[in-house]
Amino acid sequence: MKTQIRSEVAKLWQIAWPVLIGQLATVGMSVADVAMTGHLSAHDLAAVALGTSLWSIILVTVMGIMISINAVVAHEVGAASFDKIPHIMRQSMWMAFGVGIIACLLLNMSTYVFNFLQLEAAVQDKATEFVRVISIGMPAFAMYRALYSYTTSLSQTKPVMIIALAGLAFNIIMNWLLIYGHAGLPQLGSTGCAVATGLGMWLMLGAMLWWIHRSPTYQQTFPFTHKELPKWREIRAMLKIGLPIGVTYFAEVSAFCAVGLLVARFGVVAISANQIALNFSSLIFMVPMSLGIALTTRVSQTLGEGKVSHARFVSWTGVGVSLIFAVFSATFMSLFRYQVAAAYTSDPAVQEVTASLLLLAAIFQLSDAAQVTLSCALRGYKVTRTPMLIHIMAFYGVALPVGCVLGLASDWMPFHPSKPMEATGFWIGLVLGLTVAALLLGTFLNRLSLRRIGYQHQAASDDEE
Image (cartoon, rainbow, N blue to C red; front, side, top):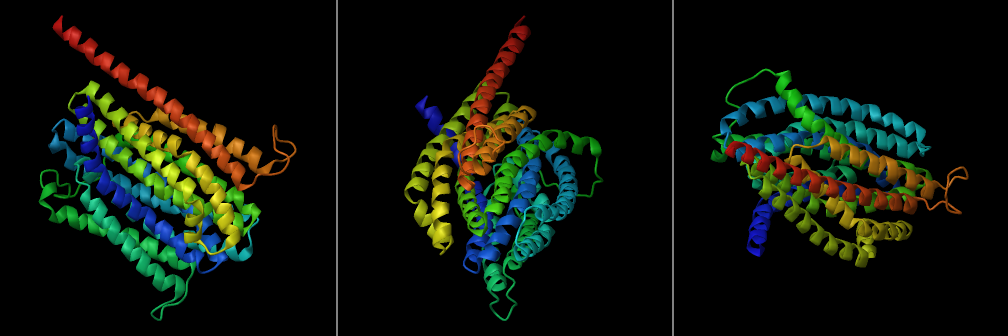
């Protein structure tokens, strides 16, 4: 058993480590935006924090929808049906283009939410401009994620790593030029972040297309041999898998971002501290997230091969590896929370609040790591609706209601504390929501995997008869 576990961990890690570096580089763009504006002014940092809250909701929802391509293509890889993949990818690019345009429009419309947050006029104007400028990258991001899922399903993850690192380097250089106004360029502050990130998305799409055209690895499944009109039947089949994943991502990220928007009423210090804690937590989250992406590929390929019992083993091995990492990340965040806060901002008040929020973030590392890898394992089974319902219940039935009670503490709320806990109260709600999601998803995966094994055994018995 130990040899089998080591072998599976090695296969999982072979897919996951380039994805991890690529994911870290992608999130690193947001980290660079927050950190670099944080050393310019509190108003620019607050604008990026609020703008990123909206941008992240739409961005991650699009990412979730595109993950459906990973499950579909990886299943065909496991079944050795390579001839089906080019058609799937041509249709997925049409789907991605449409999703990207819709996402761009929704992102621009979402800026009207700032009118209801009682923001300072300067912060609201900067945040609105940030969102509208950065939206230019959304169609490119959707198409990039479609190709990302394609190459990951083929277990070709190094292109993802290299392209994401190039995108991060571009983002940092452009931030330095545009935020602070170096090399004779205008000082754009928070808007400079938006320009850099939006252009970076188009650069990454172009690089991925170039790589797929040039590398012989993709020759057998190369999707761009000819043009093909969109076929709604195929697109609808992918959306049937992808939309519940998108809603799942939306439920989780919107809950975190809603906290950022609700915290806005407590002032610039609370906004900035919340965004820094969320930003760093997101950076750490990329490790279990990357393991989850690799896990979706491994489970899908294993099921495509018809190995149902081994798919269960693969699933729980991936979850176990993720939990082991979570123990280390929680310990690190607890011990070095003040140093992390200081790396983001030089404001002592912001540092103090950030450190307290990072302690709560450390507490939910185990449940957060568990729920993301459990969800990804279920996607390998092409089961997405029940996980979606679990996430909606966990975040909107537990996390946000509890957070509002503790954070706002209005007199009419039941069980409210004597005074508002502000951002801390909202983060306690997030801890509870993530824990509920992890427990329910674990129970569901256990039952589903055992049921699939039972179905296979029954089918084998019927064949023998």
